[in-house]
Image 1: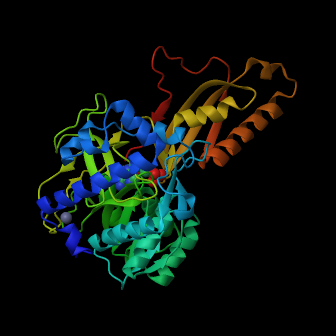
Image 2: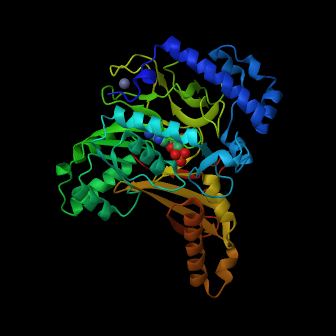
Image 3: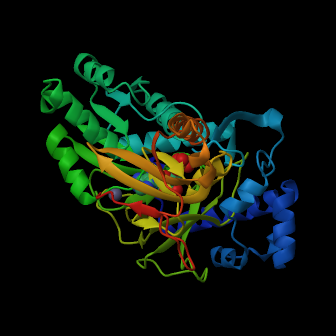
Length: 435
Ligand code: AMP
Ligand code: ZN
């Protein structure tokens, strides 16, 4: 089934003509409305008139997450605030996170693209959708919600957490589809089993999972324990949120990218060179219909590769492989994006600890855990009330990490000079998750 037959099955030449027209308009618009882009293009010696073919996009400079941070919060908006109807922020709430805005039409487009994803998963207006992505600043919850409403399905706005309640709702409301992170799906299955619920007997038939990396092994496990079809959905706040790309039920091999709205390239993350389809590299997206927050050649840091072979579902849209890693040090912990530098910034604010730390990420019962090992200062041991002081420091770090980054961490204070020191590039993160 295809939600928008007209646009999802365009012959490639027609699609490319549409892309070029939209690209020209977008590049013109950002040049004239976003000071940042005018400067960026001027410095690179390019003007909007340089776009004559789609290939000319290569001549344009990349936009990076640092650019977005430098323009925090609204510096890259291309419309006045009066036209912005929604704001979201990418997870990680320390100052200078990334804030994105949407016009009414952007929300409309986003809803349609998510509706396309749901239909690609075989859903119709007769389905009941249990949406366990977090509602709030994170794009997952509301993104899926609007798409489900656009489709006309019945949506349960569950949001994350409160697992026992989720299981009761799964039993009582009988949803036919579930949306959440793949690790949370497994966690739900496990908790349900512990509650004595036959999770295979639920009405669920399909799951739409994303927001964090997962593997075919996890897919098989989810499909076994819940007796559903598990599909991959991809997106990022900067580009829109969920619904940038989605697997189809027929192909289940790579996610179709909605190329009538987003242009995609893969690049060598070291050199920036554009790679041919099929070669693994970093994904770079250009939005060609967004009004409030258009981006030109945005470096996602997500590693994948493109498939251009036709798909049996009939969509002509190219596909991207599952995300195989990152070209930076971003971690995704229970769906929340975390940079080690953000943790470091929190630690630096705490008196009594040194900037020597290690991060250990693991997965227990399908839930991610983060342990922060950090050295305390020598002076602490001179204090007569040592134990109490240490407890306070630990509590303060746990609270600040939760408040600023939105993740729960276990903190282990260690004695001065006990953590490994690095010569050259520090490798403070041990990611022991097996996905
Ligand atoms: P956010 O902007 O907070 O929604 O985070 C977006 C990031 O989540 C992406 O850049 C990816 O690193 C990750 N992500 C989203 N969807 C997937 C997926 N299906 N598989 C792997 N990683 C994903
Ligand atoms: Zn397909």
